[in-house]
Amino acid sequence: MTARQEDKLVNYLCMAGHICADINQGALSATLPFLVMYDGYSYTAVAGLVFAANIASAVIQPLFGTIGDRKACPWFMALGVFLAGLGMCGVGFLDNYWATLAAAMVSGIGVAMFHPEGGRLSNLAAGARKANGMSIFAVGGNVGFFVGPLMAALFLSAFGMHGTLAFLFPATICAAVLLAFNRRFLALGLAKNSAATTDDRPERWGSFALAMGVLSCRSIVEYGLMAFIPLFFVSVLGQGETFGSLMLSVFAIAGAIATAVSGRVTERAGVFKIAYLCFGALALCLVAFAFNRSLGLAIALVCLLTSAANLFYPSFVALGMSYVPRHLGTASGISYGVVICVGGIVEPLLGVAGDTWGLPSVMLLIAAVTIAGLGMVAIVQRHNEK
Image (cartoon, rainbow, N blue to C red):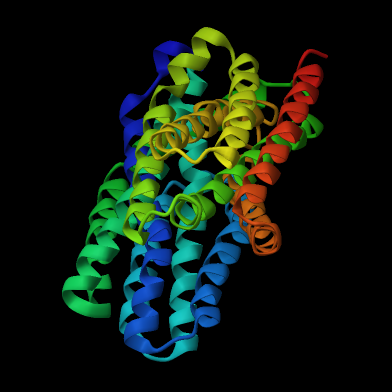
């Protein structure tokens, strides 16, 4: 595929779908306090909802990706977005805990259906500008994770748990739009299959696995920061809970900006140079954050941290997918599913460290992960040059 075949409309449609899918993923955590308040669930019970949704999403995504590699299924995107919204809606309307758990899993499965096909088509639609195309797709996730909690706070505060009905409307509208362009998506997928038959390069699954190792380190950092930055502002810097939550919004906005420009930056500087710079900046900023007690500097460091975590991310996803060009769906499912799950698995371990040694120690442990990520980037680069 040449640069002239870049399909920006498909890129932006996939980004819109990404927004509408991840609105539900981002909103689920924001509904937990309301479930405790209105339905009387325990903290363990509501945490189980998030765990079930994330596990269902992460485990199933590569399966949908493999199906998409064998036969283009762009309608997966529309159905996935709709199921994500339907499941999220059900969380607020079902009184039985196990039914609510099932609704959360339906939402997670919907997210799992969307991501592999969305990532695969975004890669194809980008033409020669893979980094730029993947950054457009990835920024949709940032926006979704930012908008979802805001919608949950607004509609659940106004209407109680039945306010989750609001999540069904953008999901239904987006699904209808995606279905309307299904033929265009399918033509792009068929073009991919045609190109794959003439591409006799051996696929480099070892290099792909190493790239996923880099992204796993990044996932641990991202999840750790999202969980512990608000707590740090409250417990260490003495701010209120509302201010701590506000810092998550700052984190999301700055991350979205970095994701949006990442493609152009990487095209000029190169993916490995940017990855080295980002992991190095993360390590230094995390150490500074751990020992800092100035509110103004802490806010500035939050912006630097999320920028560094997101600036190299889409380009490294594109790099990983380039190693397995005939299995873009599978690669997308692993990149956006299994890898993300790694951060969620490690997060409770960071919580144990925080309870034992304090929040500054958590920041230092996350900094150690960035050093590991720096080493992984060097290994991937060495394999890439062979």
